[in-house]
Length: 169
Image 1 (cartoon, rainbow, N blue to C red):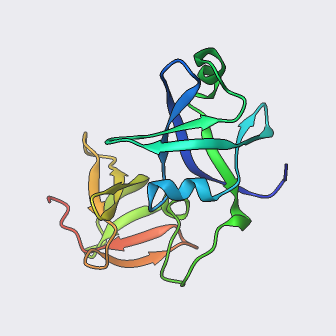
Image 2 (cartoon, one colour):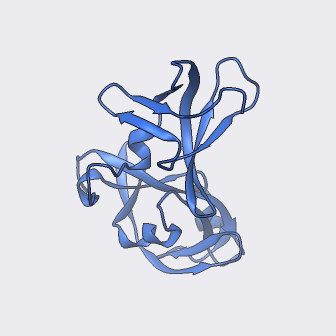
Image 3 (cartoon, helix red, strand yellow):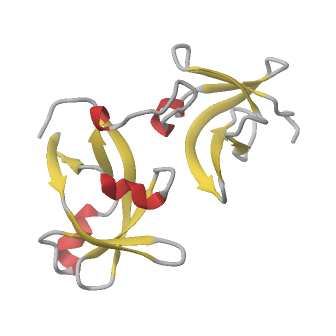
């Protein structure tokens, strides 16, 4: 494969049935967009190309058939693996767009400079991307929609996100 920097686009979360299908959690804006990329997994620090022969969108999940995986026993080792692509395969339409991987680990502050936590991951909920923020002093994660209404500034160089969000919300 390649030695370029890679980006996680999704994860294989479970097997589906006995014929080698797997359940995929996509981290792309439109869940099926993950299949537009050349995908691979890392196994013992080696890149192994994954070819998706077929996929289906079910009510609450996406299932996929990996080429040459025809039995549940063959699919089991893939469970828990991240689906990656080379960073160079991604493109942005503008400077105000962000890839989820760029936002993960950013510190989040509100307009009063109160640290709300660190972006743990993002998820698409309804029509919006939502930042899931782990807080140092709270038992529960903080969820903030990643939309213009709440995002004041994003500084990827400093790994900082400023939001218009009340810490008690």
